Amino acid sequence: MSDAKAGGKTVSQGSMEVRFRGGGFAPKAHRWVGVAVFVVLIALVQWGTEAGWISPLTLPKPTDVLATLGGLWESGLLFKQLEPSLRRLVVGAAIGASAGIATGVLIGLFSYIRAGMVPLVAAIFPIPKIALLPLFVIWFGIDEGSKYALIAFGTFTPTVVATYGAVDNVDRSLIRMGQSFGLSWLSIVRKIVLPGAMPGILSGLRISLAIAIILLVAAEMLGAEYGIGAYILEAGALYDLERLFAGVVILSLLGVIVSACIGLIERRLLGWRT
Amino acid sequence: MDIRLDSISHHYGDTEVLRDISLEIPSGQIVCLVGPSGCGKSTLLRLIGGLERPEKGKVLQLGPAPEGSLNPLTFVFQDFALLPWRTVKGNVSLVLEDHGIRGGRAKEIIDDVLARTKLSDFANALPKQLSGGMKQRVAIARALAVKPAVMLMDEPLSALDSQTRDLLMDDLVKLWSRQPFTAVYVTHNLSEAVRLGHTIVVLSRRPGQIREIVTIDTPIQDRRAGDPVCQKKHDLLWGLMREEARAADEELIDV
Image (cartoon, rainbow over all chains, first blue to last red; front, side):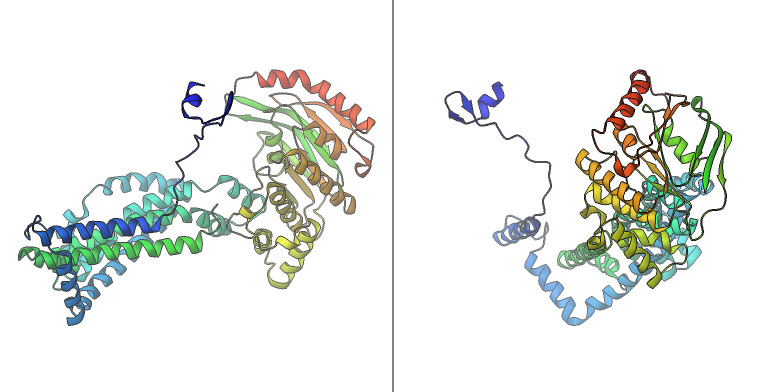
């Protein structure tokens, strides 16, 4: 009661308004806050570099980075660097994610496959895939093959783990319902298990695709003529901070675009969620 | 098509849940299974519907299923079990698709069952937009769509508030009087049992055994709340169950 006394407003003699204590813990969408954080940070760096309390060796001027990006765009080099990177990302991630989803669903459905595969996946998950790049070069060749393999392998394991977790989480009572109406095994998998696992699979893909972008750069750093990774590596070797940051900005944008695409798919496919 | 239970016993691990249950479910009647919580009534229903296999005894189907019945033994679940990503229409169509019924024929059946459950205006709604009572009506419409010979209802009204429950009970009575169906109706609510049951089977607490079989002769469409005959049966049932329910409540759950 002492709490209510401390916080409540006295309305009239002997009675007081009950103190509100139910606020918070309910995330709301505030889109503009994210933009504002970016703007403030960039403005701060711009101010610092112009005023001189950030040395040009520490951070490049944001306007210079923008000019570098503009130059890349005008000279057509942007596309030349981006095209092979995007191809590697799309091919590698598509192979890795589809193999991962297929394996995850099989693990979720069959006990023997689960018993055999789960320890195997647990064993390969923590291996830094970049460490295996020399091996991939021997197996798949020095050019595109090894890069596809690296990205595919890196997206595969997190996708498997997310997918079989999602299949495990499908409401058993819905499966029971399907059986009670005499639905075939295939129908139950297609119409109940897969849609039910979709939320988990998609949130797993968010993580897998971010990992795919990281591995893309790693693969390109170890031997590619064109590509964002090669571009960043070259800029770093020359200590050309403007170009290095231009490359980093492109990667960040790539990440944001991928995440937005998954958000879009989620809104379209998962509108049924409460 | 009648159903006969032939001395059924069942264990879960070391726990004996059902002991020597023999019962006849005549067609065209609603048989209510009542008993204290944990007495195995839902297990018995799953055994009848073939979702579980009895350890001892048999569930027999007497005579062929009526012609045109797509799924003779059809469940209505307590938690509705609707696919949240399908509309009302889609949820009904789900159970027809596997029988190769699509397009015009499916539409005919769907329109008919939605009309019978007063859902025609909500055909394109998603389950998340519906109230509990509406969801259960969708589940009943879905069950009707496969023309069941026996409806197996597992506490279908237990997740609903008492007003909705009364309304839905009236709907069930109307559905039955228009076209009598066979049903096994599991409930722990005695007023539901005396309202809907032709026969009420009282199970004892675990291990579930048949304690008493009570029949009510008043036609179900004539039963009213506060009806003296129904009230007497209700009191009789409660007298039978009272001590059992208390003892069951104080039991440790070790399943």
